[in-house]
Image 1 (cartoon, rainbow, N blue to C red):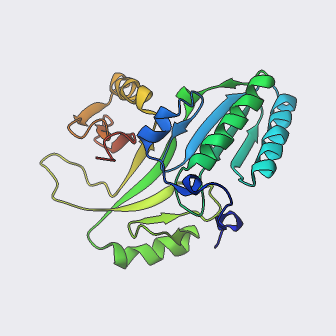
Image 2 (cartoon, rainbow, N blue to C red; image 1 turned 60 degrees about the vertical axis):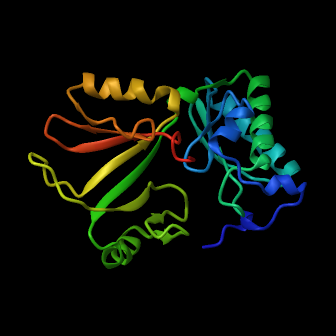
Length: 233
């Protein structure tokens, strides 16, 4: 399915330049965090009516810029994510739109909650992804993307499913084919890890940190806390 926003956008040549996580950090977007090639923000509005006004303001800014984010309105909060669909990453168009959204939120008294942001992915261990990928695409109604290891929901609602080449298991490992990857802002990752350990979990491996920490619950089921840091070297 082709997203209608994928058409090349007008503007300065630099508008089409892919920005890294560090590039985005340099823009000092206090309300926003890079999560899987997208900019995410969440604003606490306090009530539904304020949320509606914020959504309307976001819509006006998006139409003016001809650059359109995904917006989710719930009681007491508005979540926004933006990326340049024709590039498949964050660009300066997204930075400008993010600033406009933050300005609108500020005028309405909405409060940014970057510490509450997270994005869930599902990982499936497999020795042959080509053998199983068509099945999962059919079952979930997902579509392939440029990365052959991934399937994504074309509607943008469900978590990405990615296929991890399975390796040898260590003594004591339980049989587990699926695990969860939870992408969080870098500044909350270690806090999330400590909370999981404090809730009865085990830190299995922090060697790859800050890219990811491997955790296990009391029965050995694993999950990973991940960030964008360490993925651009």
